[in-house]
Length: 409
Ligand code: LMR
Image 1 (spheres, rainbow, N blue to C red):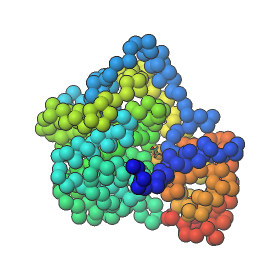
Image 2 (cartoon, helix red, strand yellow):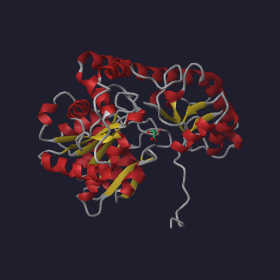
Image 3 (cartoon, rainbow, N blue to C red):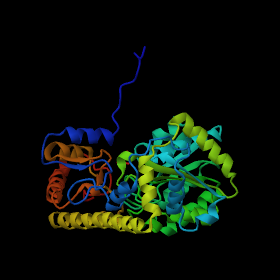
Image 4 (cartoon, rainbow, N blue to C red):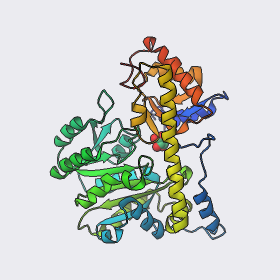
């Protein structure tokens, strides 16, 4: 029994995180997993969340939440995702709490698979390393569309060509902001063209919104989602509060389904069927924290200010990294560092350079070349720059770079 199991293939992000933790060097930098750290190099406990924690009765008995999650949380995140006018959306949107953004993606995928005998999904190449596995496990056939031009811009023409070749009802996985792993987002004009194409071909957008508030603002970052609602295009949204509330371990997420004329009770019922057979009901604590913050005006304002602070810090890191590297490498075009948004920067480093960063310098970067900007601070900035300059100086021996990025072309 259990003799013919395949070998375990380490997840490229989580496996790297384990390797970082096991590294005994004191001079090391974790630029792998997407976790925001402050200037002190630690994962912040937001003051708004701390205040919410004090208001929650930790001595209350721990009972099961409803299968669909905490009502106050569901209302509050629906407003965050869709904007202020959610009362008008009562009969068009169903939101359930989910176990993180990953749980929301999985529940959404299973729900969609239950409504379609041969479900298909198209996702950007590259995308988050787990997307393909989640949809495949739910029974989807997965295809990819190009995302990034060799010059490091969003590939609008390639994406439109791919969308126009998809069969009707194909699900299209999209990142509404802070594309993971590239940090490159479509402009509003490009989003409008994508939505036109998807509406014309009856494709179904499924937004993975893990970084709302990390690119421009909470409202700007949800623009593509809200534009779907304005245009009455059905869509799904998996939203996560791991990053913008710094609550990674609590698994706080939500799945929203928008469709004009949807039969809300039936959709909710089928989502409950999926949740019940997967994990029965979501965890209570993190959702209570998020709901407490969002429903209380002063705490809500405090949280928004803290979120602005995280975003500004990441912009500051980008500017500092750009300035330092440009001084060392005056011929390199590093403007991509300033243009990309969110936690990640796609570096274009080769496999050999990524290995050298880790072995020689203790700097951990995902094998795709994705660098987590949010892991850089004033204390490790010089070390990271030194390491990058060192491996780029060796570029000539390092094999082909993945794409435009740090290595001058
Ligand atoms: C990431 O992309 O690094 C994060 O979303 C963490 C994860 O689960 O992969």
